[in-house]
Amino acid sequence: MNSYIYLDNNSTTPVDERVISEMLPYFSVDYANPANSHKFGSEIRKSVEKPRGQVAETWGCSFD
Image 1 (cartoon, rainbow, N blue to C red):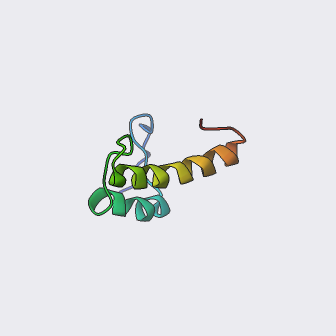
Image 2 (image 1 turned 90 degrees about the horizontal axis):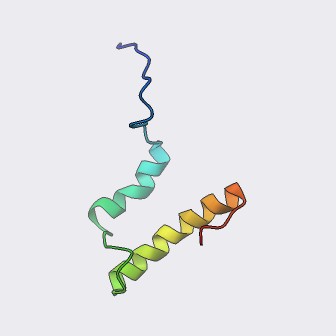
Image 3 (image 1 turned 60 degrees about the vertical axis):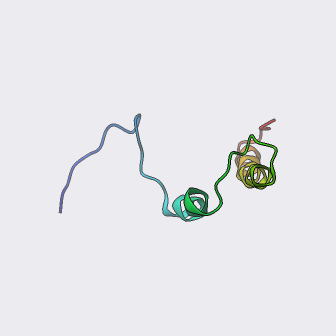
């Protein structure tokens, strides 16, 4: 077993497994530019806005 203390979380941090499982489809199946107005971009934009809203609600703020 490799034991060490990682002190460079400013440059990168481990990603929670729940986040990875939610993000996987957007790396290979459901990918598009959410800033574009085409159908695929609009669908991805909706997928991005949902978690943004959840984070904003958690922090008691707005993401607008």
